Image (cartoon, rainbow, N blue to C red):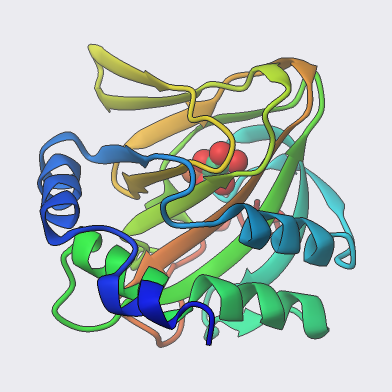
Length: 228
Ligand SMILES: O=C(O)CCC(=O)C(=O)O
Ligand SMILES: [Fe+2]
């Protein structure tokens, strides 16, 4: 197999994995550079597969937060149920690609798991000018979400910065380049600023050590909202 030499060596050296692990623990968010976790071919493959998945417009987040983003669902994680892939070949193939051994190993090491991480939810976002994702906490969608992994699938856009708020007084602004992967803890509030030109696209997945039902309890004020 063409990747076997790569598999043995791993996608990142042990030193690099440790550096990312420590940085994630200390800062809560890291950016792993282009051509590290995903090759150009894999990004092109994701792009091919996403074309087969239907898209919906989402304007309300799980906690009643305001969004304006086009979403293609790959794996869903409804409250009270176990995560499941959306029907069709493309969602399954995207998940297979994400779970490939070498990438799974690198991520597991960076996330610091003694047991395996599972992908509880996965989706693609398309954000034309004017789109944004309002300030939210990922853990409000599922209390067992630990880390979100965001793969940048576009390069020619302006705005769309990923802004993390570690506290009420701090903000960290990220503009990861095409092919880079941003990893952030699901316990920090964050947002995606409005896109002002071009189109921002991303693949987002939420990782957890727990694979059972989504333990989120829906309050009546937010029930019925379409999860983003
Ligand atoms: O598209 C993105 O960059 C991620 C948006 C986000 O924060 C989310 O889906 O929870
Ligand atoms: Fe988020």
